[in-house]
Length: 254
Image 1 (tube, helix red, strand yellow):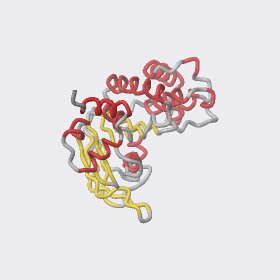
Image 2 (tube, helix red, strand yellow):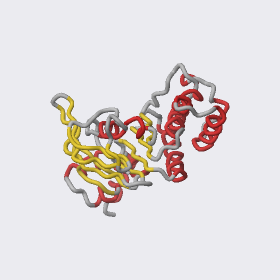
Image 3 (cartoon, one colour):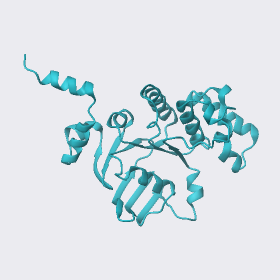
Image 4 (cartoon, helix red, strand yellow):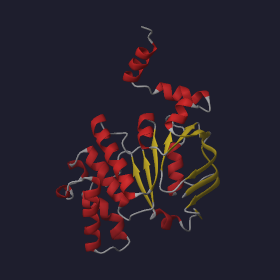
């Protein structure tokens, strides 16, 4: 579905991505995991064409991403970022329908699709005429997801979509998102720095560090068969207090 061939990207003296080879399989959820600054978001932005690689090639559904086809390919990809990036002067309805109006969908088609998406994302229909400042953070992310899904894209790209939410809302949205992914059967590429979230969503986890892929596999693979000492350090650094207590309890000899 998506392929990166020897892709590199540099910002000034910083090598954000270093000779990345990566294949994203169709109809699966692939999670990009790693610490801040490892290149996760850069990789997502390269795929959707917001930035260009300095070296290498990006293919979407077998088609080389170029300036000539970038806008056509973007219509086949939905994109959600951490804060939702909703236009504050537009209502939820207007944010969701913006692109559909731009490409000429008629009113009935837009309305039917919005109602369908409200049901899918559990967004209240009676809140569609509210502005982003008038709805909660979780609802703003649901609107952002509806906007990304409006054109029924083949690929869904999510760049830390839940990172700015409080734990309870984040948990609820994680559960809803996983159900949406299962229902839609789309190719999903998600960025997170949280191993628990990665394990919850993953079909495959891609762990990055300093612009390089360190290991690919399931969370179990990373825990039980680390390919590099960094993998273990990263996983252990994200142990919750409850895990630490449990591990200490398990290690005691009675």
